[in-house]
Amino acid sequence: QVQLVESGGGLVQAGGSLRLACAASGRTFSTYVMGWFRQAPGKEREFVAAIGLGGGSTYSADSVKERFTISRDNVKNTVYLLMNSLQPDDTAVYYCAARRPGTNEYHYWGQGTQVTVSS
Image (spheres, rainbow, N blue to C red):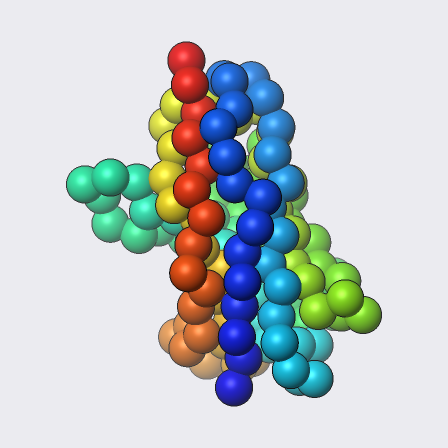
């Protein structure tokens, strides 16, 4: 089992940057594909980005592809989301999640961290 704790959210002006972090418990972090999702008020949760076991493969939603970068540190058991050129539409609760390779469902979720972008 994996426990995930996000941090790094906050209030930022449009055009600014934030780096989110998600710390994972346990010794098996490197065996999980890690993802970031977000949910804005009144909207469904949506995929943001994912990263493979070793960090060499990354996938991002088209809406963030040129602005957000996902990375991971398997020594620190942490996955990051660097968000640049933030816009008000990026306002949401951001969640990290973990899944086993070869599966589609993320079984483990953090509690979320709020990101608010002011115009």
